[in-house]
Image 1 (tube, rainbow, N blue to C red):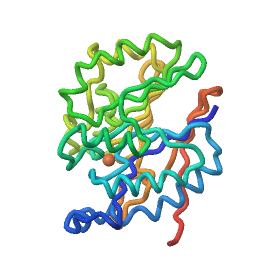
Image 2: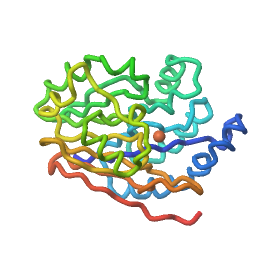
Image 3: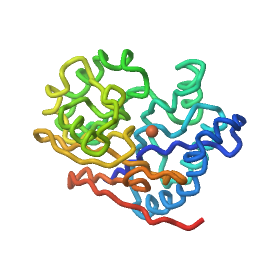
Image 4: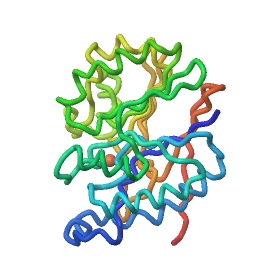
Length: 254
Ligand SMILES: [Fe+2]
């Protein structure tokens, strides 16, 4: 069984009515044509499952969500989403986003997909720290499978995560870019986890803590006139072989 993992996408609809916001966020508003390369590469991989680690829109609006839905519908199998902070950004309430995403076919709640002895956990870190840090959900669900793969937007707060971020971007405010996940220290959850995939930081990094492989995913689209390290990439994970592959996408001239 093969999973394709997508990093941040930050779709902005050409029809979004907030012109000022679209201009302000032009680097993402003009990034969507590069999604063609993502579609092409994902089709070639013929995955059984596709997972986005969040920020499918740059800011919430019905137009941006409809546009993201339209783009993601080009993929060969439905894309599962665990949300990022940008998916909630600009909405009047958490409920507004979650209702709209659910109607669009993207439920955002925490969930476990059982694949034999492996649990694939989609864990919502798009919400504020207060809403996720003390959440017992991970502690409860990780022991249910002998092996688990965690997909979540904000990377877990571990010394190795901090080091990986600061080695690429020494000025990055860590409080914003890492998160204590679950009630217990994250280290105590590691024996349950074979792989952790996150987005949010907009650059690629790979590191291992004990027996857990961590992968920070770069943007899967290419921002316009702005360089994010490693942007324009997807990852695959083979559940049987337990291997992860980084695929850098070619730039398709528009
Ligand atoms: Fe993002």
